[in-house]
Amino acid sequence: MDDTTRKDDRYVLRLFVTGASTNSVRAISNIKQICEEYIPDRYSLEIIDVYQQKKIAESEQIIALPLLIKSFPLPERRFIGDMSDTNRVLKGLGLS
Figure 1: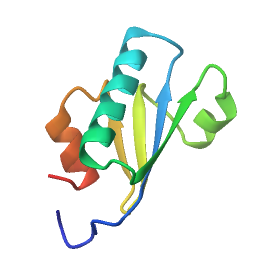
Figure 2: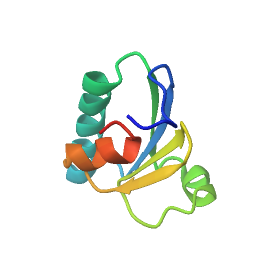
Figure 3: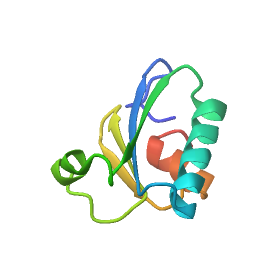
């Protein structure tokens, strides 16, 4: 854990998906598992289906899906894919 990330920081995450596609379902499952294992009770995860909430996707300038955005703690980070590479996700969250 680096100096910018404290143990009591609450993670604010938004996962953008496309309906119930295979990659979307896998990304949801993987990020929930990572959060519960590494930052239980210290995160909020909003799952946004771009088919149902086009305006939010447009405002975030989504270019590829699934997409996870960590908006807090800073700096903001974006992860594309099904979140199956746990080490890469942890590193991006500042947890490795």
